[in-house]
Image (cartoon, rainbow, N blue to C red; front, top):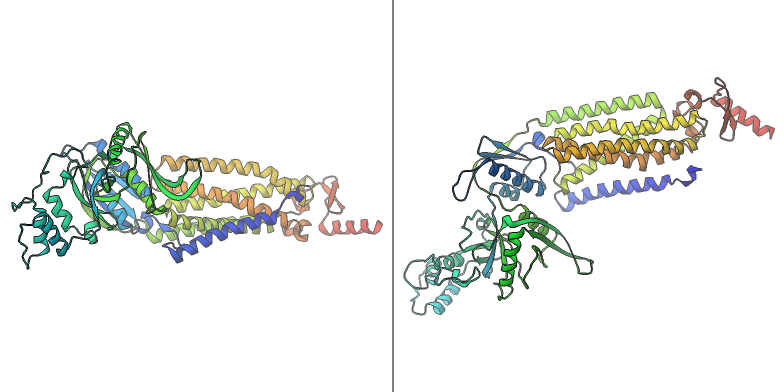
Length: 576
């Protein structure tokens, strides 16, 4: 029989493992990271931060509607890629862009939004540690570069730095190269002013790591590493970040296709960028360190400075090394993908927002869900008697899995629960119960046709699962369409709808069906007792009890009660 091929205990153990993994991951996240036992809330339920930006072009030309739309699109991509969901990015009037971020966004996310964050590839000319040069080393530089300079005993560090940078001794720091540079990597780009800035820059000072540098692309500049670990003099821009068409992070693979444990960032350029990158890497590969490196400069900070060993053609390149881990690779890929905006921004205002709906509306939404849950259970118990408690356990498990999943995604992906998402969860109660009703009714149909309950459970599942899969597939497809075509709160609704649809399948397959398989092996459900919900008499079965757990066809009205069937079975045993 079909029953013998089922393994209900194995299914239940598999489900228990899933629950344990979800709960364990959240618990570990609260202990060792910034996870929480409750999901994060969206802007409409928690409030957040609102920034109003006014865009400007670099050359002072008029900002067009296309420029605004492109800026909004890229800001939205940046925010989504940084792990913040349910953000609202809209246009205000003809010029301003309003960015509303839920909760308490990190400083990195705020900086990512309000900065122009232009991405440029510049060649490294000089690199060193992060600290400003001290007086003793400045005196050594002066002795070497300007032996005729008289060093005063009471000279300040700034005076020494000025004197060391003023190589021609005219008392003025020149901004012009001493000779005509032959390439962007030429040391002639190090002017007296650049040298002075380099001597005095202290990258260990957090105030020097806030970015915002707007040095023109055709000029050299002094820049800190984004972590404050080193500082650089970099030449004019070789490649603008707008030429990067795609960037992603992942584990590095060998030429034989084996996956290593080394993280890398892969990037692709457009046709013009591919040719520029090939020319630049061909030049850098012939130079000595540190001039064999190119600096990825984002908003005045060097986010990466990989070295080049050979010319890279084809428009595809990868960045790897011992200093790149999963987090830094993902961050760099995000910066490369969405680093260049067509505009610069002036922050008009930045303020905290209170929740537009707040805790009261959230409480009402939860109350509505609980009322709906209670009404559904009352109906299930009234209609299906003891089977209603099976539905209650299945529905409770589905809600628990949904809560654990949403809480975990809030930590791992930055998902935030909005009121629209709460509405999706409430609607999912009916979708989930519909699966139970389909299964229970199929079992009852099999009982009416005269099958014993152990077989009715299996045959009923075979007939119900096709309908359940079809129904959930339609719901999931609708959720996908909504998610990819909509924005804001509608996406939150679609996400929760799709998530609960998948969880419905997990619960029905790994819990409800195995549990029913085990229950019909008990005397109470297996004998179809009165309140079990599987009583053949109450279901209108037109068969008579034959003994040994089987039935035989009879006429309508010849139905036997439980006591009569037991008596008939006893008589059969005595007669034998």
